[in-house]
Length: 69
Image (cartoon, rainbow, N blue to C red):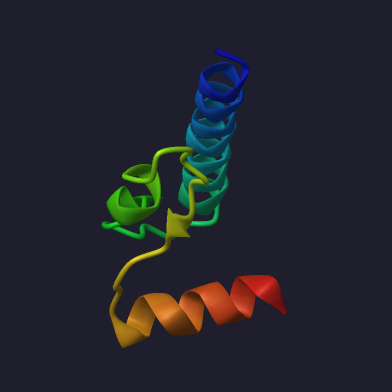
């Protein structure tokens, strides 16, 4: 029961982090179309979510680099 609650909280936290990152990127004019939780990391008995930033064009990479600088 405790493991299930911990796992659920981890997944909720990861989903919220992805939501916040997506919003911040949108404000910077950047869209990562495949930004999501990694499904394989959720398939474990006790999920430990990883965030998949996904693929993007070279233009998006350059824009992201400029924003980070």
